[in-house]
Image (tube, rainbow, N blue to C red; front, top):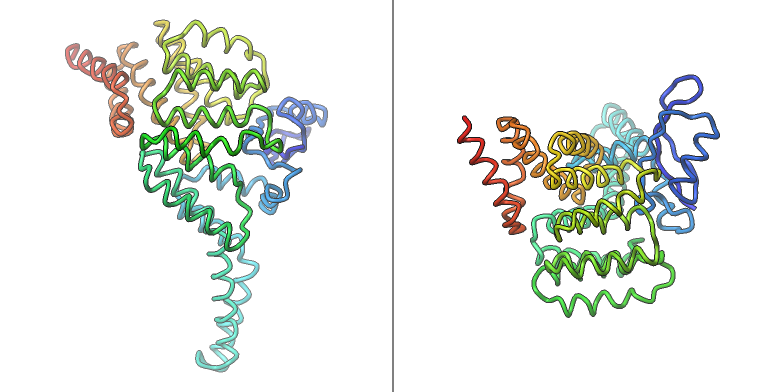
Length: 375
């Protein structure tokens, strides 16, 4: 069972943000509809929902759905930490009041004033300890976004040590795959595959999980045919919407198999989607339309994908945001709206250059050159 964040309107027309316990996204929508909600938006996918069968995952329930949603939208780590610390005002707030009163009555050097200071320091140390894995993981994701593989490797090794020292609840498989991802990105594919193989027989993970994450290792190495093969294996073991979209995306984006991608997307046309999944679905549909020279339809889909992506500020989503921007710019140029495309080209170019995406860069350059000629 999972706890999915959602927003919806209740029978009185009030907007509600909460969690619903369900076995799947489809089950979540069904339960909410039966409770009389409308305009339902399930935010989480299974991958981001709280796994109620996992004690470490259940720790996320300490945050309300609304607070978790606000955190999710933030791209700045400093803002996230500030919001998390503000949530502990019930602890440090009274200590601050205690210190002010004690200082006013007995002076700042008195024992009465020093006690709340000491307790505040203890609380601050606890907060730093509790949030260090999140800070480090966010840093690793950001480094991976920019192909700073050595930094990813160093950070994930430190997280592994932190987990060992303090028994921090952090998924072991995440450490393994992030390290493998970094190794593959540095050209050490064989070592990366050997590292990832440790997870292959972990029966506590969802069927197809290993194959799906193995695809990301091949992706970091630029082996896109192998990416598609492992994604197909994941889909065979678990024919979920996520696995289907992943494969369709690889076909249309990396292997120029637009027809195959369209067939896959047709299979999930009526499937219930979370907002997180909808971003990728819209992007994939937009790519298919763009490659089929249906620029207006592509523009609509890519615009919707980019707008919806603003609800997700994670470093992982940044990858899709710049990809969407690059293709949105191409769609705008195809619709003769070259000036509107310029900021999207500018925003995506540094990323495309870092990832050495020469094919997409060439298309962007050609579209921009065409626009300059027309003006």
